[in-house]
Amino acid sequence: MNLVTPDAGLLFWMVVIFGLVFFLLWKFGFPIITSMVDERNATIKKSLEDAHEIEARMAGMVEEHARMLEETRKEQAQMLREATETRNKIIATAKEEARDEAGKILAEARTEIAAEKEAALRDVRKEVALLSVAIAEKILRKELADEGEQREYIDRMVEETVREEVHS
Image (tube, rainbow, N blue to C red; front, side):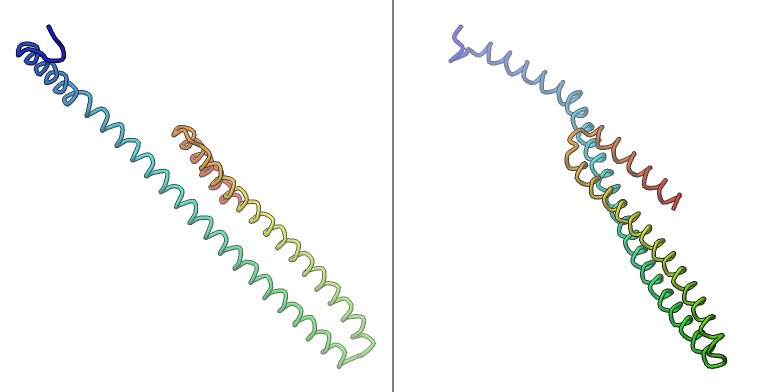
C-alpha cells in the first residue's frame, strides 16, 4: 500500500470518511460555532450601544452644567444690580441712614454671592469628578480584553452613574 499513489479502494474510503466527517461537522459543529459567533457579535453590539448611551448622558450632564453656571452668573449680576439700586434709593432719602443701610445690604449681597459662588464651585468640582470617572471608564474599557470583565464593568458603571444622578 503506497500512500503517495493510493489505489482506488483507499481513495474510496478516504472520500467516504471525509464526507462523513464533513456531514457531522455541517450538522453538529458549524451551527454551534456560528451561534457562538452570533452571540459574541450581539454582546459587542450591546456593549457599543451602552457606551453610546453613557456618552450621551455625559454630554447632557456637561450641557446642564454649562446652563447652571450661566444661570448663576445671571443671578449674581442681577443681585449686584438690585443691591446697587437699593443703595442709591436709600442715599437719596437720607444720607446718614442710607450709609448704614447700604453697608448692611452690600454685606448681605456679598454673603449671598459668596454662598452661591461656593455652591457653584461645589457643582463644578462634582462635574469634574464625574467627567474624570467617565474618562477613566473609557480608558479601562479599552484595557479590558475579557468579555465577562467588560460586561461586569459596564454594568457596575451604569449602576453607579444612575445612583449618582438619583442622589443629585
